[in-house]
Image (cartoon, rainbow, N blue to C red):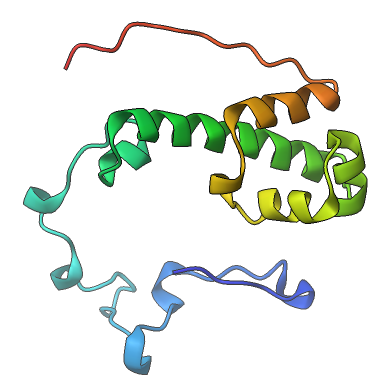
Length: 138
């Protein structure tokens, strides 16, 4: 579940017990803790492999590519946020068009290659280091 906040509600915090459930009902006990009957049984919890894309069923090669592209896109988004850039100014910095920058900021991962993302980071003056290692033993 995700929430968006208006600027006036920016500083307000929602507690975990105040979220409404579908249908408008709330499940909580007298001490403020949620009813444990809605917990996922331990037998249904699977430890992550470290790559969410592999965990949800992408083929290994595609999962690795998606993970790398995600990390690079997050670096670009962080840079835009830290420098408080508009999409137009960020596009100029990264050497792309504003609609292309919009695609990146909206997470349209399928529109970007690893090569393009590395090029964009380089245009912004950042250095990308690549490390290759053997897979961990299972």
